Image (cartoon, rainbow, N blue to C red):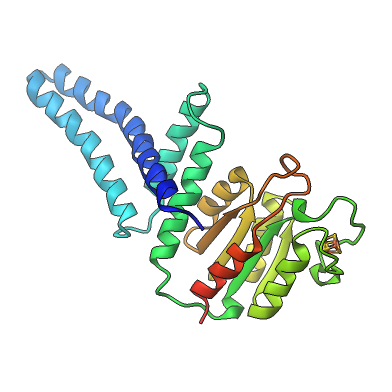
Length: 237
Ligand code: SF4
């Protein structure tokens, strides 16, 4: 699902985002203490302590001591701001969220789920644009012709007996999750939808699989179905 190199990169980015976020509160602490007449050395030490607290919080999140995704959100927001000045590769903050989340989900892979608790959620852009079958409400009407990955995903769904749904957007995905009430979501999407969705559905365990843009974004996208099957094998009884 994700390799070690990606994980290390994501971990570094995660802590960089937290560091950026912690600069403002650290400066406030420094200024307040200086105004209160506390010496510079003590004020600086307190500001550094504030930065350290955020890093420790991040470390606790990474180690699974806390499940609360606040550090992930804070880091994501800071990196998104940083990205707006074009200093990061495309979708780096979003990919960081997906990688950090998957790392966490995998570390919890000791917990097994029954197939009825699992939802495979995919975006409608996986469907070939020439296909005339309406799948949003009845995905099983797919004829499995092989022109797009939907047919293979349906075979995986049948093999494992999980729920399966095609979302036409963020609101539709949220509605599907509310209706299905899964304990585990194997979600396929682009970095933006996947990162927002992951942060949105907490505390449901989610494994994110990025879709491939063989024809550009949101058009005849693709997914490695072996990755989906591997994730299911890992988490299902
Ligand atoms: S696999 Fe299914 S959804 Fe995809 S093009 Fe063929 S019939 Fe349509």
